[in-house]
Image 1 (cartoon, helix red, strand yellow):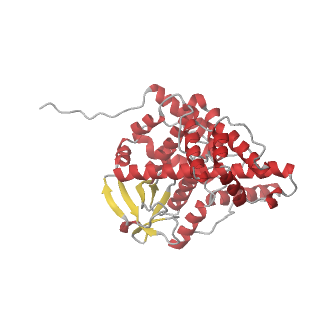
Image 2 (cartoon, one colour; image 1 turned 30 degrees about the vertical axis):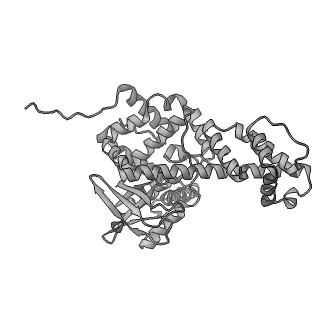
Length: 391
């Protein structure tokens, strides 16, 4: 019998060149110029993690900033800064670690700071989004000697830490860390699938995939690069609330680099074993559910923005407009003229002088904002409007 030769998918020359451009422009502060290969995943990931620790937004980065400031002051005074030690509060208990993770989850929609390079801002500070914070937290815990992994969900990464011989999911909505060994439903080669029994508002359990930390960092960064590529190509994607405009700005700035290759294909070549994780049927259902959650978040953001803009316009026309009409009253007005409201916002029906001024302003703002959305989002918002108007 002829022996079957095992083959590996290597990056093409064009893909490798594109990786180096992305690494330089979007990933590293100081590019180490490492080729993207399966065997280099750990090295690249750990280099990213070390740079995360340098950012002033991390605990380690804050300690380093204080040390640098003290050293500079001593040098100006002509005092040898050698021997200066600056230490921060070390995490000691499991609750300490979990509280640190929960604090990390606060205000996690901070743009696109998922790499050291993208976390930098023009003023010299830094801002990490949920992935950036998870990478930083996991790296800091590793630096303190803990064994860590990452739990991947469709919308938010979590850190899993080994403590006292058990593995715990940190920073979830519960006040105490979750012992994941009680949550494992499937244990595969290279990952664990865990299910959190507490149902969400839709009555469905949460599904998480727990994987090696170094590989998860690399996978999730390439995933986000692929998302930026799709934004650059104006494709329909599901974004977290508040990240669309900043994502478009990043995509526009690095358009040529992002569109040079197919980054999902590159991700699959570098981490082929991780592709199998996402073929699980429960995972696919979780992805679909989170897409609907994101849609609802986006729709809520759309309506809130329209209400706020209405109040701003009315303030210029009416004294203390916000005090004269509440959101509830404005919604009630829409239901007094449901057919006109829907036809005007979604079509070419003219203004009607019989309609109250507040409602005319609101309808005009909704119509203007709706036209700026993609066809897919427009249809979703029209459906939502029909439901809100009971028609």
